[in-house]
Image (cartoon, rainbow, N blue to C red; front, side):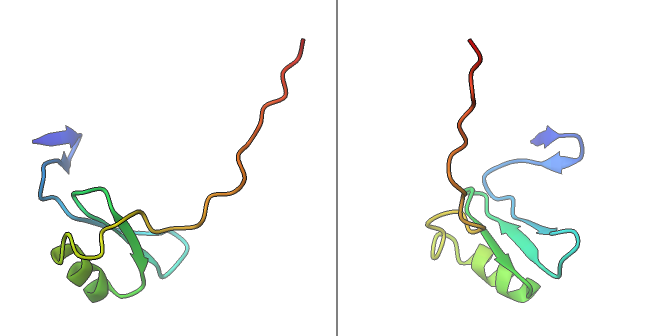
Amino acid sequence: MRTRAGALGGDRVYRIHWVPGTDTLRGICHCGAERLAEDPVELWEWLLAHPEGHQGVAGPAPGPPRTLAMRE
């Protein structure tokens, strides 16, 4: 199954993306969990250990919520 042009989809697709401008890699599990690391072996071990360690999305903490000013 393909979800977008050239991208595989399904319940066992693992992805590792390079974060541009850094030495960091982002691993994305088929369950939606993400993890950042500089070592590709560490990411593959984490991905293949599913569901161990896949409790949430790793990444920078979200900032304060934005509020929009409404004109009347």
